[in-house]
Image (tube, rainbow, N blue to C red; front, side, top):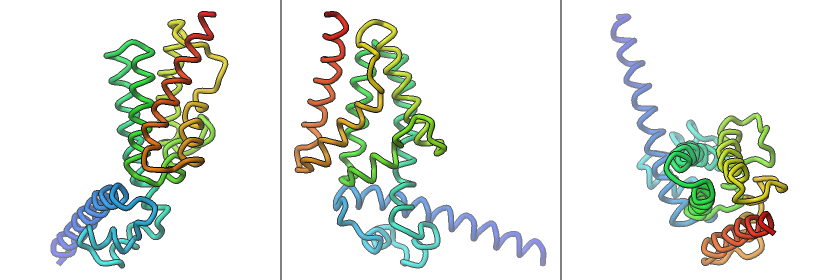
Length: 195
């Protein structure tokens, strides 16, 4: 009898993990397609699960968005390490900021995604926010140490600039505008340091 109960529990856990993974994958797809208008019902339907199953794993839309963004955060942290090992400091910082903008843009939920990916403080208690902040700071500090840019701004100002473009003018081309702005800010920091 004990073996039967243990088997049922393992199967329930495996089903729960599979459902959670299907919900997260569907959420990424639906948020990319529909952005802020995506409902939890849309996501449950895309995942092939009932609303009850979705709500068991993610009781609110904010909880689901935050979890999706935490996965993106892990990818951004890994990318920072890769870029630091394979590119010059300035190229690495620029490429990472482009990836950050792309990550936020694909969700089309700019304010939610940005705040979930990166808090207003590098000392955030949320480990994924802190890790993304640390990844950005590491790339920024490398560029400063090499003399490519000056270090008299907070690295988070780059993220705030992106968020500002998105918030003020969230039209379909904001991603390109944000990438141009980041390029201009980074170039401005570099030219000021050599002046």
